[in-house]
Image 1 (tube, helix red, strand yellow):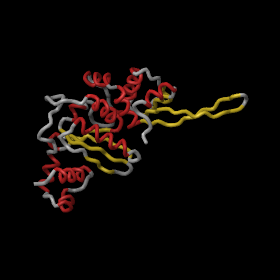
Image 2 (image 1 turned 60 degrees about the horizontal axis):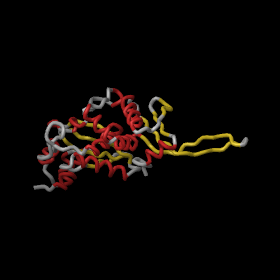
Image 3 (image 1 turned 135 degrees about the vertical axis):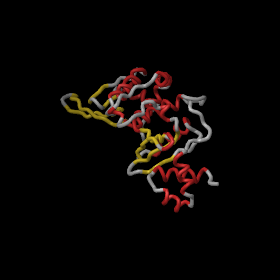
Length: 247
């Protein structure tokens, strides 16, 4: 009997693309066991909060929804098991830990895997019911299809707009220093000020970000069709309360 730590190591290796033969030789686990762990990683316990009686941590869900819409995807495996993957920049290990923690808060009965790639780490979790929680899932990139929240998602966003924005800005946004020049007494002076920027190719996801900012009375503008900016001092200060710099 293999312990859960061995299963987690094996699943992480499989998620990275290693062959069953190579993993079997390295870990000393039979290929039949590896196939079982790969094809049916769903826990025996843990109910779906949408199609069964499971409880949903609504605050954590709003946070994870922001990350999913920014840098997340679902991919189907055998037996209708789905992998939720959130791609996280390796420059920000604190955010990788944050994503892993919020995934565990939603699906605590199974381990969360970290799969290393070039320049980023994918936080991965397997479950048959991820599509229940993310009905926006579909074929192709998000900006190539319609992205709309359903009623129960909108209710959660209205309860926890700050956490949705935290997920969105920490995935596809940043807090950066901007500058401008102004003539003062005939002398050109340079002024620096912080601003938040969110970039996304999906007009629907951009609209959701706009609506959520407006819900919190945070002013925004669109310097480009795929880029949103919050630069007014009061708006930046408000975002600093629940987002802040990534480092």
